[in-house]
Length: 43
Image (cartoon, rainbow, N blue to C red; front, side, top):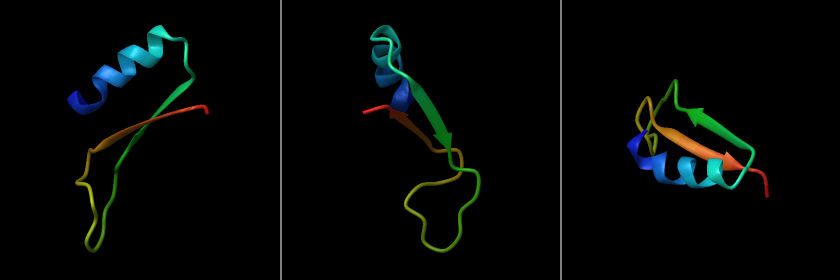
């Protein structure tokens, strides 16, 4: 979560619509481990 906190704080202050995604399952050679977070906002 530390990796996305700066963006989360900034986007929240700017009034952005935000969604947080969390990796809950992986298989094979996945680029991120379980529990990884990603923020997305409306373009």
